[in-house]
Length: 85
Image (tube, rainbow, N blue to C red; front, side):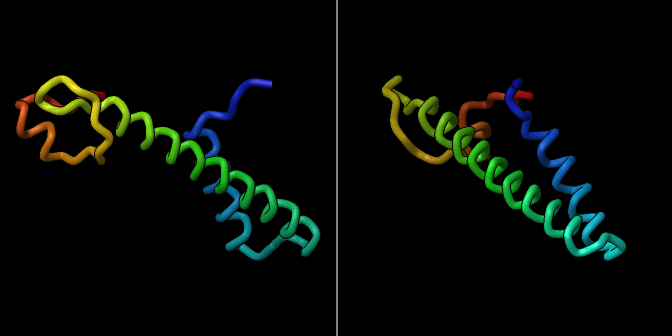
């Protein structure tokens, strides 16, 4: 089975929230999709944590040495680099 993409997981999670907010589902179906939502939420959080770690690892200091630190918008402004997509 292919890995779930972050955007797909978030879209499904938003759908689940909308369905639960309506309150039209029977209790057993509400519990079923609530459990799915919890799993998706945990999956999304893990994906975000992994992405954050990758960014921290890839950032280098002025000497070219890799140094673990959080990325900020000031980093782009300091080196004049445009934001990458």
